[in-house]
Amino acid sequence: MKTIILFRHGKSDWDAPFGHDHERPLAKRGVRDAKRMGRFLAASGLLPDVCLTSTAIRARTTMELAHEAGGWLEPIRASETLYHATPRNVLSVIRATSDNASSIILAGHEPTWSSTVEQLVGGGTIRMPTAAMARIDVMVQRWADVSWGYGNLIWLVIPKAVKEKNG
Image (cartoon, rainbow, N blue to C red; front, side, top):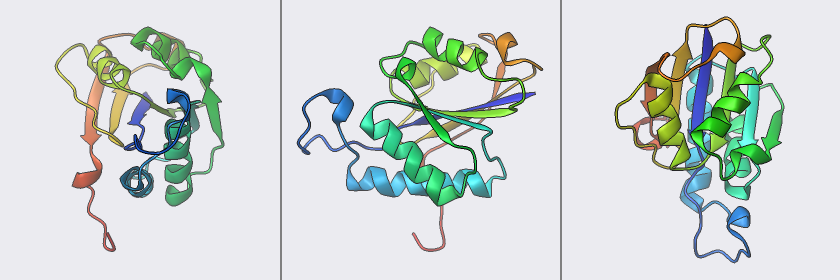
């Protein structure tokens, strides 16, 4: 079995000075939620074997904050393919993952993340709010065999649903 975690970037700051969409930073809420979701994933017992993020500042920062807050061990790699990606691009990135890994987390953007979850699980209507994580398990031995419609949505968690002792 292989596990895919799709992680939408945290709330971005539209009022911050930025030149290009790629450079838009996280808002204060986005920072808080990224850390919360990093701790949530660690508490779930699922530490990712591979951490990939879009190159956009808001996605990279979301992944970095979650990684640090959750104490994840694997290094983060940025992928230009995940910025302005289509679900087909995301599937290509997933399929290129080393079979030594059993779990992958990818940080990226809407509407691609919702569409990718929908296609992986074979339908439905999914909405991925900012900083949401969706876990999809696929009963394959090789990442190259991941296909549309064969995933099982195990959970979709939004930051508001994560209760923490101190926040």
